[in-house]
Length: 258
Image (cartoon, rainbow, N blue to C red; front, side, top):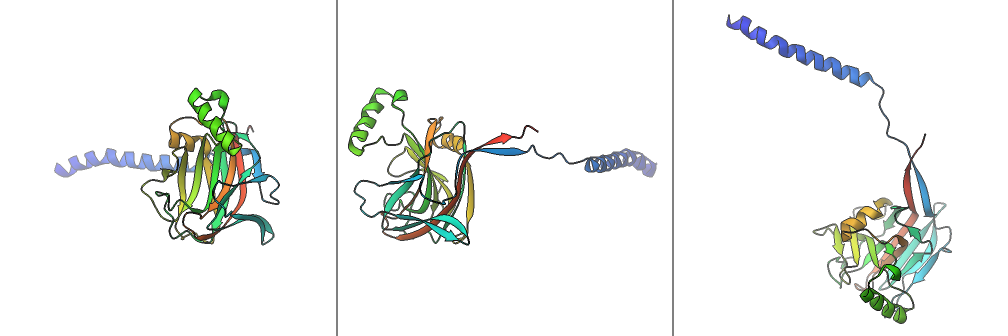
């Protein structure tokens, strides 16, 4: 009685098991559903054949400027930055709509990180390379207080300072957060994409959604117009750094209509 009762209880379970196996085989036999193709529409792509589209940016009271030049690497032209107790940047002339072109991608390489670098202190606020997205100040959308503040800055420096910036950096070490305010201003938020020397000497590709990063960093939507800058700076630490950048693209992703 006990044995026959157990068999009656087991038989339905085995039936369900075999049914599940057959269903799995049937699903595996179905053709795989491929992801919908995506194409890119670009605001611009910089492959560093020349520096004709870049303007130097110098900072008050910093006399030593980083050297930027085009370098050939196995038949491919790349941007090389040499910083020696120096700081300056290159700003791309193309101004784009962040809402129309919310993606940025580039590849970069460093020789080594800075031994005394520290993203959490002013004395260590240096990086062998960083990519800026600079959001433009628009006086038409500013408060009265902002117009006074930015107007005074323009009178002093000859141009409006940025409304805000995203800094994508290669730090020398990990920090408690991968998103940190710059130690000089909370209008510049830093994303620590890489750290340390583990990848030094090799090309690393980065891709970021600018809108998502801005909302994460500032808790609001960004101004619509922006531009891109590249910078290597070692003025605070007094160290020497060498880095390279190539294939910088600002784009949007469009689902293929076909």
